[in-house]
Image 1 (tube, rainbow, N blue to C red):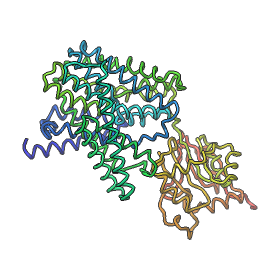
Image 2: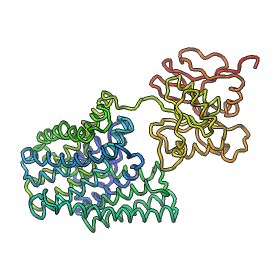
Image 3: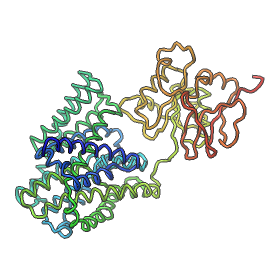
Length: 589
């Protein structure tokens, strides 16, 4: 290829990777549904986006390092404090049963479906055991199942990737060295143990390097992100040099250590690193899908559909129901876990690498591994993307669509405002620090948050699950200002605070940004004074005209979304909405 063709190919790959993800976000579908067809089409119509032409033999190594970065980022999202009790056992059984049953069933039916030897079918079966956070996470974000189901599926999808990658490498070496798969010998188990040990050592080295760079040197966000990227790539590459595919374990162990060891304080949101990971995912999917040609898909299309049906309708339900037996999950939760096993980037990456090597070694049927894997990825992701949401609703495992509000403060007017929001049909959670305020909340019949909730919420590495908005209304304006800044990245929705008094001499509150509730006239002390003088919070249909002197504070939409009036954004209610109003002070007060 000429220099101009290489530049065009690289630019087109980046544009397709980015544009596909933008389009997917607008269509509210997993990016994979757009990325794979985009790459496949580009590969079929042009000759400039093929990774073998652009990067040659280096492509396989770049894919391995890119997947390691993705798994490190996935490991950062796995907080061991959330994996406790029965959940840990369920995840472990899903991994064990899923790997065994998927491998055995695919290896058994592969020779008949795809006219390939048993050893090549075994390679295909080991490739297809993986799932992956890059597809499971976006699907769950769209479906919004309850927290228990979400944790189980995210942990399974993340941990199965390095396990499947290592087992795939062992299977490949067994085929390449002996032209058969020795499943029953303890030799392969010992080889797996050695690979696991190398990955764990690499993960420990990575965690130590990041402790030094992030804690001792105290690098900022930009240099800290670069240090993380360099550490993960260096450790993963070093482990792969020592032993093939152990870099995946090192990457995820490093991410787990950074998230779970005290002292790292890794933020829950990492915009720059997350952006980098999204770009890597897009580039990988586009690049790998360009290597699949239409001529390679046609002969395996119908058999691949049969394999997808077996994996979706037989293998996954069997694995899920066996792994969740006597687990305490409801039948609906067990059924939904049995209806969620899409394949993702690690399956594509391992299929691309192993099939090419087996083809070069002259293995019969090896050329069918990549197109079959491609079709299984597209088929499972498309099927689950179209059906997961209605299935979750049918099985009653979807989180309520309305708002779950965390109201921080225990003054009488704050408690009464929480009572009004609950009357409007919202799920209200309150937190206060003083015993008297907490008793006041309990007496009002409002759910009281656990004592360490605010400490958790202000921890940079934490994330409040299920809370869609936070309202800070304590009698300490500086606390409200500081907490609004710290909590912003730890909540799914926005964080608001009541305004400080005008001409305030507070240390922080007058100088800190953030969304201020209710406008400039209804600051904290004005609300408290007006309430003490007899004003109250009432809920009325938006279709009814507001009485004179009433101030609108919140609009509760018909779908239970909560929109507060803020200093910068007035809200216009619709007839089907409800509004929360503050009444005027009674005459004579």
